Length: 218
Image (cartoon, rainbow, N blue to C red; front, side):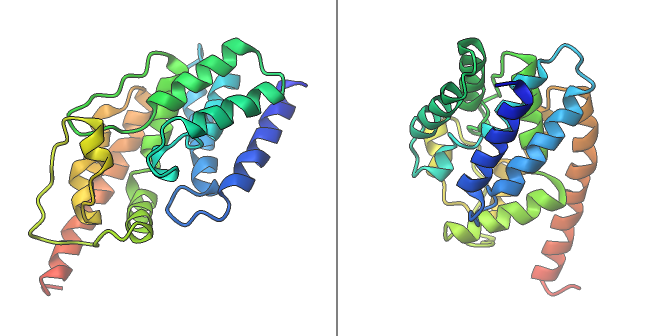
């Protein structure tokens, strides 16, 4: 099977798996990350586009948030899928490593991507957590998991380990300070850093408006 056919079938596989999600991790999140990753990869000439596309499409198949905290089930599913298509072991191993590493793990835990392909997918995924789309996704996720929208008495926590971040039930607005506003300075690639500046500013403006309305000032 040629690479284009593998990408096409993988996109269909992911779409069927996530098309009914309402937590902000739906097919269209995967689609946007896929498109963003291709755009970033176009400026990172040494990247293996086949790995980038597969990793972008499959990156959330292993996301613990979508598997009741299980960090292994999704990885197994993705590996079995790629092997069923005859993808060579080198590529499967690379995609699996990206899937294991891409998730944000806490404010005090730096990202740890080792390859340019992983860095591109990391940046694309984090860009989709920022800006107008990122705001919408934050509230969609909070609503889907019974998190409060805002509680002024809940202060942000800089998580020192993945377990404490994973188990956090912070309100959606607090999540901005625990993750979303930190992403701009965690981008690997020049293209993503430039895009992140605009999205970061938009989130800051949104928060200003939110707090003004919250206090009845507008």
